[in-house]
Amino acid sequence: MKKLSLILCSGLLAIGCFSCDKSANKETATSGSSSSAASGEKKTVYVNTDSLLANYQFYKDAQKEFENKGYRLQVDLGQRERSLQGELQAIQQRAQTMTQADLQAADMMLKKKGSELQQYSQQKQAALAEEQGKKMQELYANIREYIKKHNAENKFEFVLGYTLSGGGILFADDSADRTKEIVEGLNKEYAEKKGPEKK
Image (cartoon, rainbow, N blue to C red; front, side, top):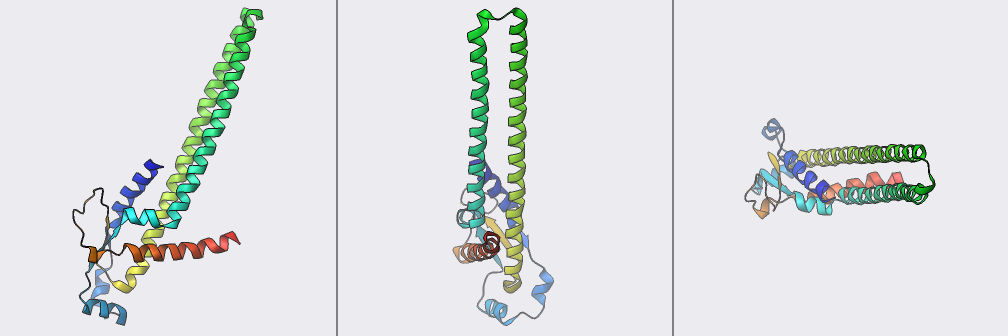
């Protein structure tokens, strides 16, 4: 899950540099955005991606879901491996009473089952990774779409992704931080989408 978190952080930084339509800034602004402009609000703002991930319920739910799926996969693989070990031990215990042909057949059967287990493990892990990738794309899409809607009122030129652990932005003024309102909006939207699904 730490790997997933790092991938998501770097992905959010990549999509963080979001440019809105500059021609829209030249048009007559609504009363909400004209008051923002009049109060000297910054045209470039940022979202702290660390904080966004820590507080966005969609991400927290996805992280929990994949932790559970990863755990269940490990349990499944462990059981299959123990079963194969049990078969090996049973053959070893009977080895002295078995013919050379029986031992060779048992050895081939165990190797085949070992190979099948390895293939099964790889397929399941690849399927889980693919599912995580799709969930990441959905996360990015949710954030991009929300920022696009949110920016229709605010008319920021850029909404940048910022992280304390590094990245392209070396300094960010706290007054340009829009993380809290973005996270609140994302969580509200997610709760509305999630609500009907549970009914």
